[in-house]
Length: 244
Image (tube, rainbow, N blue to C red; front, side):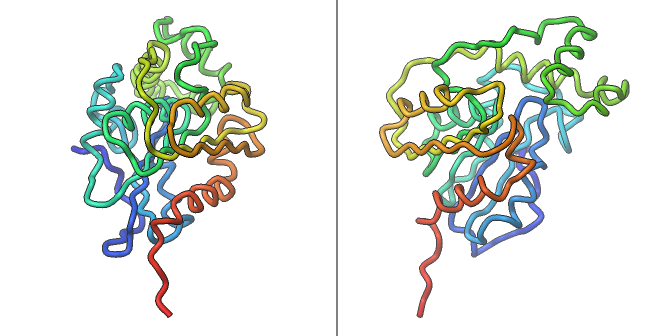
């Protein structure tokens, strides 16, 4: 199984570029499915679902960067030009995937530049009760889910695996990526400061655009239209030419 989420809108013959999307820690890639309606027809939205969530819930989650990149690599088709989008943990995965196979454009959301050190305390190794308490403090998991024992039993292995990848990540210095880079963030995000977004500029030799939107760490799903307008503008070069 490639990990590609089935899209609500199929665009055979109309799409000229694919946008592969990677979610935050514990996130379900199906959250990106509505983008198919909100983005222009020439952009085919391709959420990549890693094991252990959504329709891949029965599959054991991967807990190493290399294993996650293997899953992502297998999901990407190069029959059309493609772009990568990643939010939070997904931003790191998208960046590392771009070093394996260069996209036409890289979109980074809600994550500090990869060479900057981890500021948060490591939690992936904590006992269940402490781990759940820290998840609640981070506000990245809805409270109604944290209070559901059956769901937590299924969720915890995936959450631990994702946090392990994030917390054990170590950047390897390499030449800057040759593709354009768009960095998105939120003005009220407690996890990522403006200066940490600006530090992404050293990771591309092409154009780098940095934009902040109102909201917190999950601004992207609360108010998707403004960031999607920015994505559409960045991929406008792939829009079909209009014939008179």
